[in-house]
Length: 435
Image 1 (cartoon, rainbow, N blue to C red):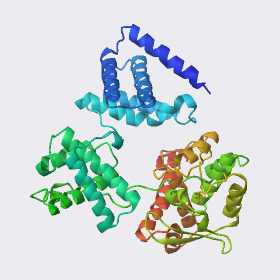
Image 2 (image 1 turned 90 degrees about the horizontal axis):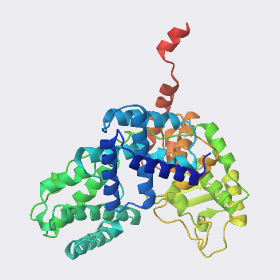
Image 3 (image 1 turned 30 degrees about the horizontal axis):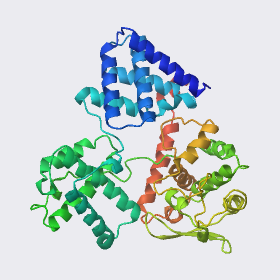
């Protein structure tokens, strides 16, 4: 495993050589230099710029080594991505973190090569300064959503974030006021979100549509433009839930250092997701009062559905919780069960999906997957549902355990079984060859 400082020094030396030599990849280097300048002007952090630079410099080296020409092309990107995927079969080390984002970083470079534009995948909303008229209207709408629509706080944050980006687009790129919005502006804004997942784009479009109706209702817009937005329908079963192989789960749980405070906390969190199927948000906000020791149950109100849920407090989960509460949890007045391990020992923030907890122990266990899949805490919840289905548990029972309000949300796990069978199905040609 390469020391990170050695990797950084090697990258720096490689960059000096590239700058001093007359490279046959001059046009590709100019493209990369332009893209790096663009992301710096967009305010990307030093860490992010370093990651992009590392990936793109590896691409230049690959192009030179394979003699693939001096221009960026789809073929070059595909070949480079294939080589990275071969290396991905080995666990990531500290110096290989750039490989986890290589596909996205190639797409960013491709977009820049095509139209000279780079869109930030995550916009720093705090850095956006809207004109007072827009800011005041957005604040009025936020209050309307609280008082009249009764949106949950987490949903409201997502909605106002998306609308802030929309309003900034209108102001900075189109120089429009709210009363001057045109149909073409809406189409152009949706097109600018094409780097996001379809499900995310569908949510943003829905939020903008509601906001346009609000503007019409308040008389700010003369014509209701909500119908001008495209309808983006994402089938409920468009994606297959990611599940872990049993052997990998054993390795994951076995890698947790249960003698440390962090290990005690993380082990209990992993069990709540895998054994009880709790969502990350419900684990994050779990209170001491939700643990009903006398009844051996966990009773919560689900953040996503606002529905009550009662789960059995099994011996395995109960023992892990007791071990953490007695020997790992800091002494504090906070009622949340799970706290950060460093002072001031606060609860996790609302936007923390606890992904790093899984990722930390997965890396220590040197776990890799046979095919690309989700790796966060929610994938452990999916795994529980899949295992229950394999054991013949009726869908209504699984739905109740997971806290689904609709059986349709649970039916998607039947698709996991079918896809799993396809994944292990024998290739007819291989069968014939064996004969």
